[in-house]
Length: 58
Picture 1 (cartoon, one colour):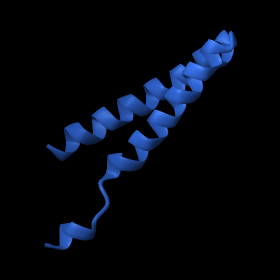
Picture 2 (cartoon, helix red, strand yellow; picture 1 turned 135 degrees about the vertical axis):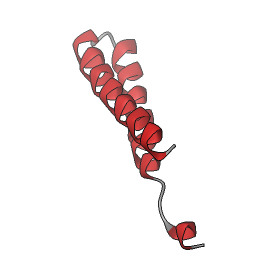
Picture 3 (cartoon, one colour; picture 1 turned 180 degrees about the vertical axis):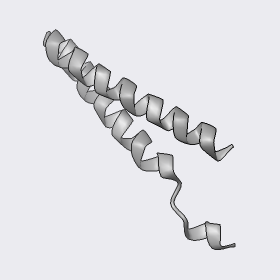
C-alpha cells in the first residue's frame, strides 16, 4: 500500500534515454556524426544503468 506513492527508479532514466536518443537521431540526420556518437555513448550508459536497476529489483 505504501509503495503506491513511491516513484519507480527507472522512470526518470527512461525519459532521459528517450531524449538522448532523439537528440542523437537529429544530430545524425544533420550530418554531425561526432555529436551523434557522443550522445549514443551517453544513451548506452543510461541503458546499462536501467538494466542494472531492473536486475536488482527482481
